[in-house]
Image (cartoon, rainbow, N blue to C red; front, side, top):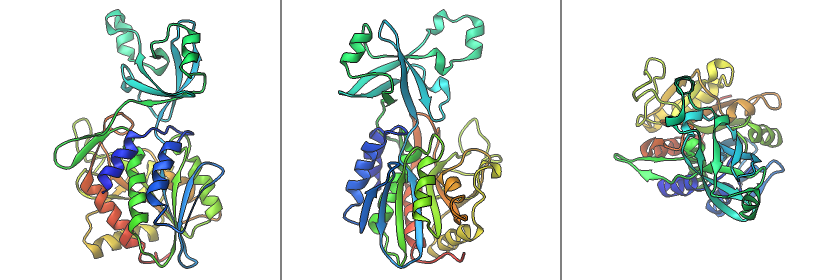
Length: 345
């Protein structure tokens, strides 16, 4: 059941460049359902279901945004850099887990108490450079004894909680949702074509794994699976973001105002026609915000026809992202059905 897989993936930890625990889950879930599975030099996990010579790549990035220790002071407090796109006030007073040489080390993100901020400081808001990690150590030696050092990665200390109406909240739904969907697709799909399911690395820091794996695979076409911002809650307007949770997966036409992906019209039509034929609700998106692995993939070799299937996810890049399971299930079905046919490229 995709809910249980998603919980397992979200509760796992895998910041950019340290995705091994997530890849281990994906490998265990798909190995009995594919013909080949291997990890490439970049760390991407590539699962292959063999068919004819027409190659379709389905990519989902496994990494989550997180932190990395950059310095340790004499009192045992840790300074860090952010990996990926954090909104700094989101970090203030969160619990974290550092993934050190001796295992997981809990900590908290501390900062100057509001009671001691002057009016100007409060107006400016919290910056990442203002924060530090407190793991309870008393000095540098105490930090070292816990297996924490410069370069130790960190992630948020959160686990999935079920909300009402089939909705879940948790960390790293961007993009463990896509990973869960790709696992489910590989478990179910029966296609005449050769399917490359790629669990990519380092998407949040530059779409790196998608670029290298697409070059190596050289597919005939590709779909990235990711999440997108809906406009269905206070503080955002549907006229600017006409995508809503609970109304089906989202097919990308353009993202990042065209600076990222301008999707292949043939790929968009392939997915749209499949949705219509199978009575699967879908939404179409022309976005002005972020982008996905499809941007890197579609520029490889001589150009690879690509698009993205996204799941509307509230509060992206926070520890409390929210998704609707019905959207995820519909997205899985859309891919499983589409992969039975060949896009008219």
